[in-house]
Length: 292
Image (tube, rainbow, N blue to C red; front, side, top):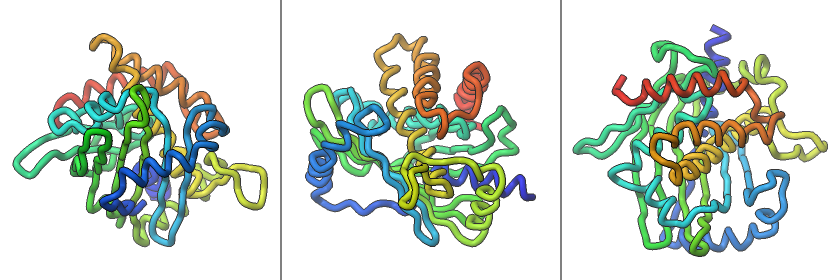
């Protein structure tokens, strides 16, 4: 039981805290954010134009990334905010993450959904994983701005209100500024699972932010959320990079791109060897091509 709750706690942070509030002027607000973060985007420990933040409340966690992508807005919008292809494209993004074992998109009269299974960092049967069903909402689409929300009302072990929110704005003809948020709420069972994980296999894991009272990186649940926030940002970047390749080369390109990018931050993100990752993800990608 301890192993199961520890595993669940790790998976819990794969989809991180409560949905951010968006108003009518969110496009202007995102542009203002780009201007206010100019110094952090230009110089930071990530060696790329990126700013990461995380917050912890009594019953929720939250991770945010703001970053400049080296792709035109039309490319980002067409790939991740497309009502016809967007849901399936998101599955190709999510499967890059070590703990995502399956993702399959369906579209019906009530809209699009993504069935997502979370599991260990090794190959395993879907019967031993956790499933969360996300609704795909392309909330706002404008000539130079979009926002898409993946949401799930509930998950296993008292978790609820899952959200993955991506908003993007064009900043010039070849670059796009994005804000990626992960959020969920949890009850007693989820809190206990997280505590168990952090006291055992997650006790030596760290995030990217420095703690307030030392020069070392933060640990705990904020560290966990930051690691997974970075993994998903790198998955988006790897997916977009693969679009310039011939169709039959895109899977290999984004798998290699994602793994090599995570290895730039070995203390936080190294988990498996590349040969094992590539073999596992090829198998999982093939599995997710059909409904399971």
